[in-house]
Length: 405
Image 1 (cartoon, one colour):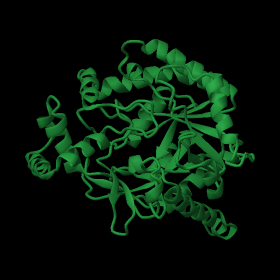
Image 2 (cartoon, one colour; image 1 turned 60 degrees about the vertical axis):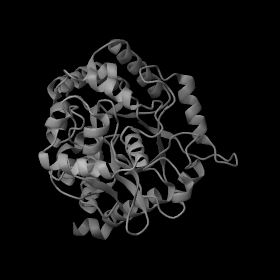
Image 3 (cartoon, rainbow, N blue to C red; image 1 turned 180 degrees about the vertical axis):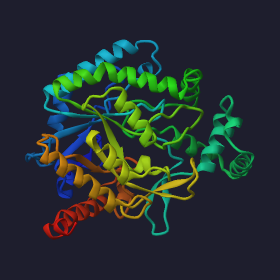
Image 4 (cartoon, rainbow, N blue to C red; image 1 turned 135 degrees about the horizontal axis):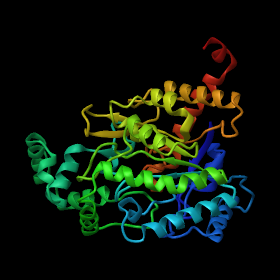
């Protein structure tokens, strides 16, 4: 696997030097400051590449921008409203500009409104590390008593509603404000921040959009952009829903193996691929991650390797970001499936036989807790995760292990 690292640009508290010392081979980044729906210009792309080219002392870093994460898909495209057709044309232009700059992999998502949702951004574990967490009762308290969206009562059982009511009654005003901020935090580094009123406005725009309709809009989008991607040598990879179950009455369409099979079959081109995120998909107990890699591996263009610990196993239950080898996903089996797919691709002569991966979401440990990097993206926590993943890769690739397997 190609070992990459997500970087949020020059303002990221984790530097180019840190990445090099972690031993990464390439960089995953995006133009977070460019408004969604507008073109990523050659000049802006070149500037980000230049940002990556030098260490703090001016020495060449040798690192290159290898994966885009993410080229955002506008809400207009997702809803097919407003300037959605113009936004698709701008997306195509951005794709061409990225190809001209030598970048071949573009990750995106089709989640309505928010890119990910957590209730805690620095949940303290027993060993003193902190991590991101989704608490189902805290989220219900937010939804029922802070957001107070239309029709919310129908989405929760009487038992959950009462537990949320008790939780909410015990919350301080500071915790209520913190919870609101955590839920709408979305993607770290994005150009947009939403207030509660913004969220309500966006939710109203999805009142008449079912999962079936949203899936149709995704397929329409892919029918437009995938043929061009195929023609110019770009690999597109859709990130799964995070978490992979309905929230705030919004549809979820990329949460299971069946979802991915439907969308890749609907636009059946190699360029129309998958970002297989073991953390997002792992928040459902019924998702078999190594099995998904085996069955869908031909279309996996990018990997996020992280782990979550399910605190209860029913759909929509609480979970937190675990250390990479400590959650519910069998990471050894997962990496073995990836390496097997790479071997198959290499034997078939595929130029893209090596799949880029990044250690996703680390726990804040040691000096991470004073550096205050983007939530989920600490230096040392991700270094620890990458080292563990690299150890598995090395062990499984050893000639004696390979021969025995």
